[in-house]
Structures are given as C-alpha cells and as structure tokens.
Length: 95
Image (tube, rainbow, N blue to C red; front, side):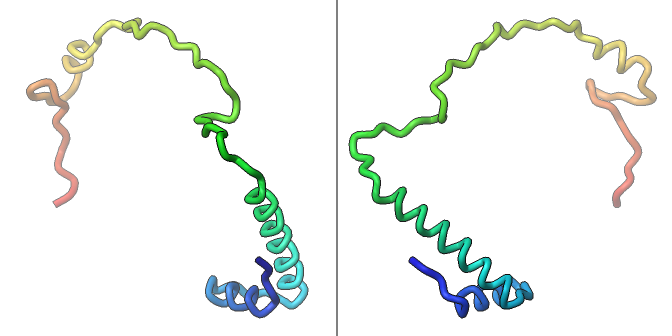
C-alpha cells in the first residue's frame, strides 16, 4: 500500500490539521515506510508459532498474601465527627 499527497491532504483535512506541502511530502514518505515495514512483517511465515503472552518468558515472583498492618478502623472512627454503621457521615454538598 502506498499513499499519495492527495490522500495525505485528505486525511489531514478530516483530522482538522493544517499541513504544508513540505509536511505532507515528509508525512507521506514516513507513512509509506511504515506500510512497507508492515508488508515485510506480513510476508513472514508464522504457521506453527504459538502466540506469546509476553515478549520475555519470565516467571513472576509472588509473595504470600499476609496481613502486616493492624486494623485501626475503630480508632479512626472514634475521633471522626460523625459515623454510622461503620461509615463516615459527611455534609451533603450536591443537591
């Protein structure tokens, strides 16, 4: 696939971008290079290649899920201005 200047200008207009002739030529060249790379990648035979979930095959080290902090909820609620059923009550600010 290859883009010409008319297509670059049309795409820029649709995107509400103002591009000069020099910018359009540079953009067309860059996009055509990208399309050429995509065509090269699509030409590679990938039959029998299993998809990978990550680029590097690593095992993630996990730690045991243990509680390390004590529960301070009662202490914090004791000093709160208003609480009810374990919840903090605040003034209504939106009607």
